[in-house]
Length: 132
Image 1: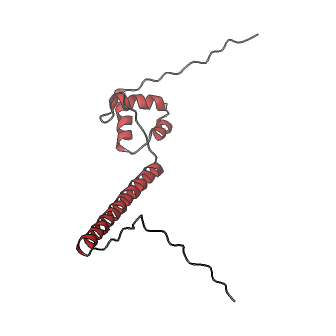
Image 2: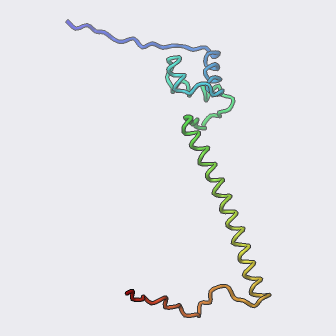
C-alpha cells in the first residue's frame, strides 16, 4: 500500500519592519546579502527584492552589485595604479615638450639642427677586428 505523502510548503510572512531592518543592515555595510541569508534563513532573492523595494539608495530597475572586501581593495589598488601611471605619463609629456622646445631654440638661435636629417646616409658601423 502506497502512502500519498505530500510535503507541505512553508510560507513565512515577514513584517515590513523586519524587511526594513534587513535592508538597513545591508545598506550600512554591516552584512552582505549572503551573510543576511545565513543569519536569518531568508532566500537571497527575497532579500534583493526587499532591497529594491525598501532601499533609500537603490532605485528600481538598477542592479545591485555586491563587492567582497578583496575585490574592493583590488579595485582601489588598480585605481591608484592608474593615477600613478597618468602622473608619470604627464611628467614624460612635459619632458618631451621641454626637449622639443630646446631643439627649436638650438635651431633658431644657434643654427644647429639636432633632429636627424633623413637625407644623411646611415653609417656602416664599426668593422670587426681580429684579435690575436
